Image (cartoon, rainbow, N blue to C red; front, side, top):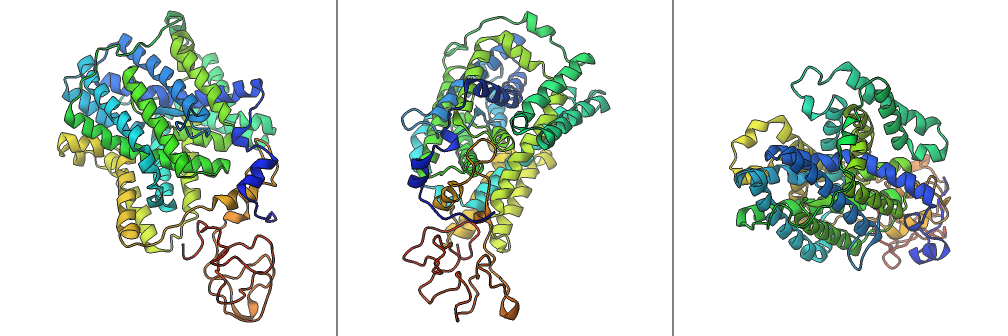
Length: 552
């Protein structure tokens, strides 16, 4: 694809609205929004189910937790996507309970005696951590420079690789069947594989509109087949209530204790790194500029949603990574689709009977769709890592050691069982441990040594895409602008001389050999010449470093 000339964001926005800000017709908003709900639902309810079962809650209390979670998820997603004041990134980000907090919350609750008494201590820690996140958000936004592509890409890859086993667990029949003969039954794997293949076929052969609904169609088709074969039970739908409202402090006033608060604040710090990665990932997918203010607004939304979660009997919130994978698969980038999804979540939170219909989707069917979506999250991380010079051993070590650390909790569980309870509550999570490792290694290798880090050139991205086809399927595809510059181009008599083969930083100075030939010592190598004039912009015309450009 030919390289288009660079244009400023103002020129782009003046010509047409960015697809992120496009308001789709009601029918499309409904379908695409409901697809987000289906993709999100399993991950949304699994946290209250795991925490509630671990704390020994009754069935009624567990149902109440699920409804409260869905209601708060809907409100939080609308705030994040629509934006209120400086709260919300105004990007297609769905909010959900963070998996990072599961182990710490269980440890806090059990340490307080379990049951509803344990929940009160958990909610006290959650509310305090939410307030801390909201207040610290603008300062954390200024620390984005300490999270270069090698950190963001590593964190997102870790999130995807950590979530994939959960999708595979659902494909085998779900966590409830572990230890049961039905776990891993070939019939369960057939449902999961059939759903996954159906999604792939729709993406490959379907028309653009159908391809964007591939996940929704896969879930519906898989559930229909399971129902026809007698493996989908909708009996609980008629037993569910029609209407139910989550009231503030349903279980009583929260209790505020020091060590649970410290543990939850640490968890939220890791969640802030996770959200930062998600914000940059959705910016990468949608080709929408992300800056420090965007990150700060997204983190404020996390903090506000977490405070609401503690008040309305739910848990800490963060941007849901699996829905980023859905945005990439469907190529539907409008943030108003997430607003519609938030409306659906609120309805599901108020109508337990409607929510029970979605809950009837068999685990293997959900697992088949989750494998694709979670894998796409890891793919976004790998895409960002593709802009990092991994031939530099420091970057390679950050990635390698962080991936190893993320696998440690599942690979060697007894190691964490011997740790003090407070430390175990924080570190016994692959996402937490791997993310912490990536951040600390980057500080050690690149920040404390004052090595420069790469940053994305958002002007370049928006300029590249300004003349692309505008729509949910063709707009904002990556173009040649984001191929890392080759630091070792061919030299000598056989070196390419065409205008499409820019000379690298090691090109000898000499006579002009084409429009990309250096013009003298004042020319900065590795930058794109927007006008094609033969004078790549030097120090006086520098637009900012590119990911993957040598020397950055």
